[in-house]
Image (cartoon, rainbow, N blue to C red; front, top):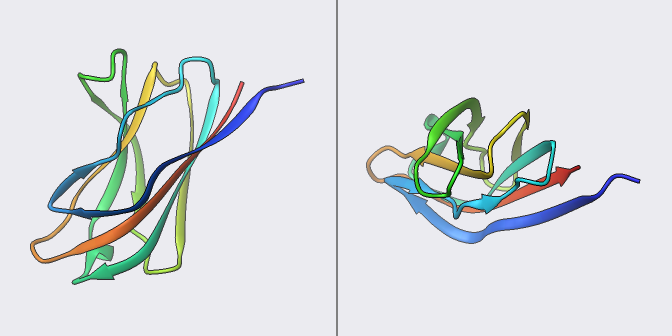
Length: 110
């Protein structure tokens, strides 16, 4: 039987300017689905994009290549990834005056 876990990495965190989620240790997993939901927004954060980053140590980061649209409030975006390193996080750069409350969830399977 395969192991799985769903981790809430950001819950109601306000993301503005340059923002990144906390790193999450995923070394045991072979695949991940990352869900990003907006719980509310100011300005036009939907014009920005978020992207997945990977890391061997949780300190030095490389863009993985997958993009997540910043969803409108109460909508959700997702991306599926595999073949990642030890840590995952999501990063974004929002336009001046734009922000949103992020709900970021990572579902992992062995």
